[in-house]
Length: 57
Image (cartoon, rainbow, N blue to C red; front, side, top):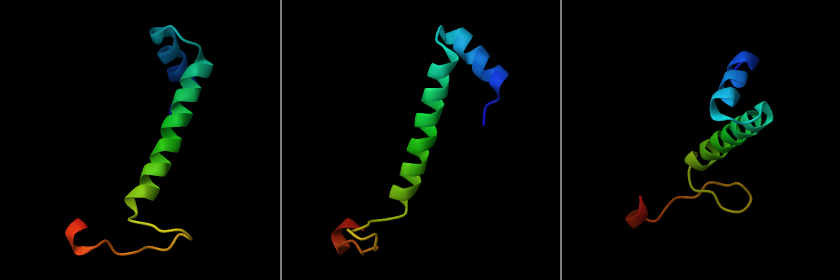
């Protein structure tokens, strides 16, 4: 996603360590994965999709 030299420049510009930049990027990618799962639709226990009531569609 972002190469090492760019991560170094981001760290230098923000006054943080490269490890902190890596941690933020990892958190961001994990959040994107979670959002994609949530976007899939309403889920119930067991991973089965269910329909929303008419008033909530």
